[in-house]
Length: 192
Image 1 (tube, rainbow, N blue to C red):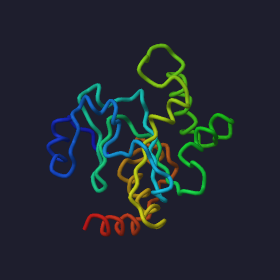
Image 2: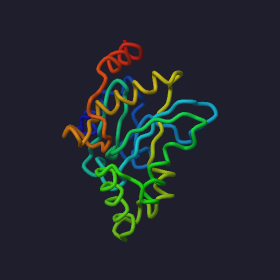
Image 3: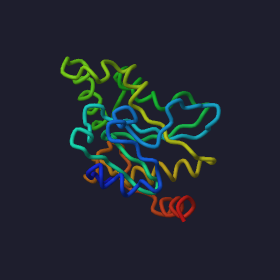
């Protein structure tokens, strides 16, 4: 993932995306995004957990990845995938944390860090509990017609943002050995 001044990012993406003004990213958080995700309409989806306390916007910056073109106003820290009919996968990580079953050390540390900040009074405009967090800080990205596309795109996004496990990014996903064939296939199919 690349982090640059908002004006540079806007000029790069303006012809491809209708990039919102910087102040709008406080509500958008990530762009493009689906505000009201329809689980019946979209069978396959990717979700991205954002850190509400680590804003690029405070420094007139945006994070971005290209192919797929996604802009971030806040630090992404976990990427996952889900399918309709298997529950609300995007909320399962929070449930696992709250029931003290989380075993991924970096993910557990990130949950604790966010929870500590939610419980303090220093951040009046940020979430105060996990319910507020899950309603506003988990972004859903979709446009996949097959499970293979979904799995390939998840790997592509994780690869482009990078993980803390391989010291190349902000994600706490454990995956570090990407299927390069899958990444090339999805880039060729979606962005040829």
